[in-house]
Length: 153
Image (cartoon, rainbow, N blue to C red; front, side, top):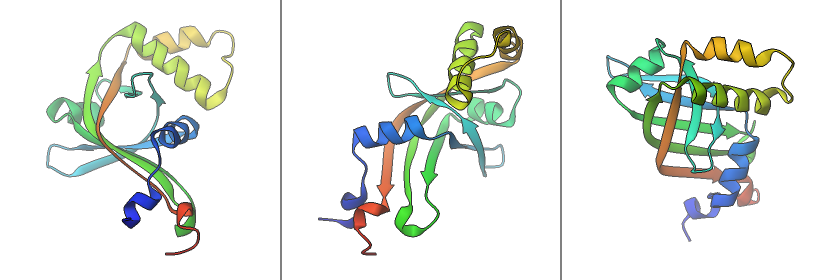
């Protein structure tokens, strides 16, 4: 069996890792053709797409408008034997819908901080007016969990 297959995460392990992880790196391509990588808060939708929000005029939104091909990576571990992660390559779309944006902002806020404080809904609606949802539909996924090697590198 190939070494790559030994360390792959199952679909269930990938889903659990992404549900527990807090940030994901979003890589888009800028107008000069260079990678533009930024850490993002996110959620995984029931259909497997990855959702996040950004300001409509942000660099990443402009990059996606020009070229929807993106990569995402979530990884943990401080040493080689602890490295664990998921990389997703896919196409991003920008959704300019206020209600969807408020919903994504709310769910991500709950994921990151727990219960919503009173009055936060209005603040999120105000913020959402300037934002868009980034929806990434996975086309290729890779994963790794070096702890599965059992100390053999």
